[in-house]
Image (tube, rainbow over all chains, first blue to last red; front, side):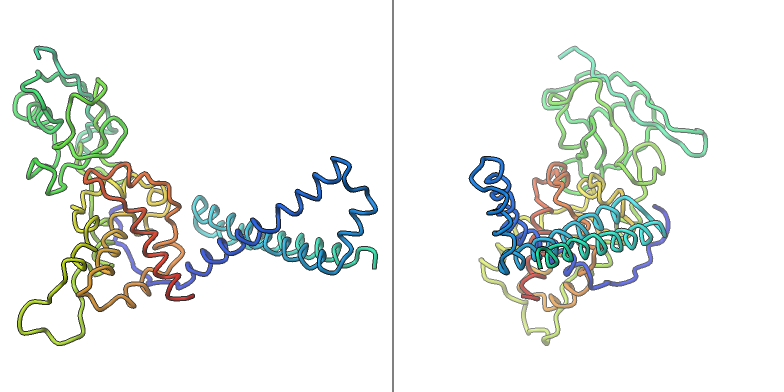
Length: 120
Length: 236
């Protein structure tokens, strides 16, 4: 590293990345267990398919489900972005982050569409 | 006590060698409590005068003889031979350009240090006498002021290996935190502004190599966490 360092100053973006990664983690930690409880309830026979659908159909469930998906996408995007920034350099970095954003955006929108289109 | 100490040392002279190699030296035990620096000095003075390394105070204060000892960064002058598995593998600090043998180019490291403006910045008029601190305010600096800038932590940090061109590294961030904690310093806002960056500060992923490596027993990861919390407090 003999190259003279050129200080470009601060990008003032690090905090929000860090904040949203942790904020989404808190949302996930709150909502994800609910999904697993439902899963457990189905497999253990506590809930049959119709009661599961009744749960998922309610407005509050759809709202929480949407929050969960949004938090999951934000968290995955932030986490993978950090990893790409760690390991990938130069132009490939921006390309990969953009590609990931597009794929996760599409996936998230598709899932949200499923949640709200379900059963009418 | 008559046994020999076996040391494998990284040798590289860019003017002569096409690539680096490890060279074995045998050094007699001279005294109990012998440090690695004593063995290096023995080699330099009795076996091979061309062996090149930095050293100055010889007691863990100047930070000159940071090197990679059996895979862990540390100061040769305060590392006891007794605790080291033999043959002792001695290499230069990782991820730095080697000038010769164990001497590395620290230009970039100290350039990053200068970027955080490691001096007291104040806007209020200079008082007639010195700027005073209470004992509690002074105690805030414990755990930061002891840093001797040997580079053992920064060169053990994988984030610095990968993105050292922009990530400040643990030593420099510990120093940045030291000035933010100083009750006499009045540039907290500017210091935070300068560090709020995904690369300069937030490349730290709490790997904790820095804490393991620090020969002074400091915890740069905690200092970085303190900077992050201060930024959080500023925004929330």
